[in-house]
Length: 316
Image 1 (spheres, rainbow, N blue to C red):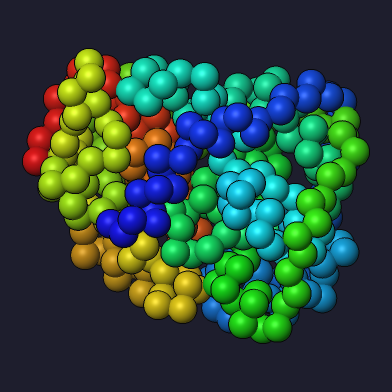
Image 2: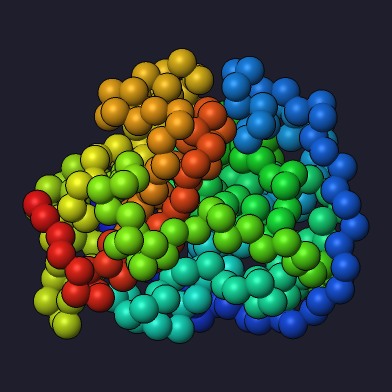
């Protein structure tokens, strides 16, 4: 794993300083579906839009930049709202403590989304740099938990936008708080530590981290009583999240993705749990699995940090 990605995870707790909670609440207007969304691959239409479509519809969608505030400030798609994953997550505990980095509960999550000015009246397009940690997928996953169905990602992310000649802005977008309120909190997308423990050996467990993390030769801060924890949850198979992208940062085709999942023994009717350090990379992978047709997928949000921190066994 490269230094940039290590720094992204190390900076997660620091991002909590930017989180300003707004308790606005109300009812959300129904969103218009992205019926005309076009992407370069037929299978990606349920989860992705391409740069051309976004340029044509920029004023008709909420654009969400999933980077941290420091990266967002250096340049983002004009009009994009900055929502980094910690802004919708519980950052009060320390890494290794129960609940660190997990998605907020129904009322808090709804109020936080409302504070960004999102009201559910328009589709949402989330983007990031595909060289990151799948943060765009984690944010999309949380928005879907909030019951917002019309959420997509930008295929190729910010590099594709810049390559097409798209302009960048350094002006922060601040919308007035909305009256959004969650009516359906979709916790079927979430696996807890207790759920994972109860289902070990019964589900397909996918570790979406790097081979080095999986094999225990490196660590991203996971610990048990102050001692670093190395390795993976027993029975897990390795699928590095970045293998789902093409070299140019666009998502692989349906056939390519299915071949990857077949190779690690994953079938369409399997019950699947993905995990990583704190549910970022695994949140992205879970949504890609769903896109391709693996419907029984949960993201273990607390992931290896809470697993190891709770004293559960792990192996190299």
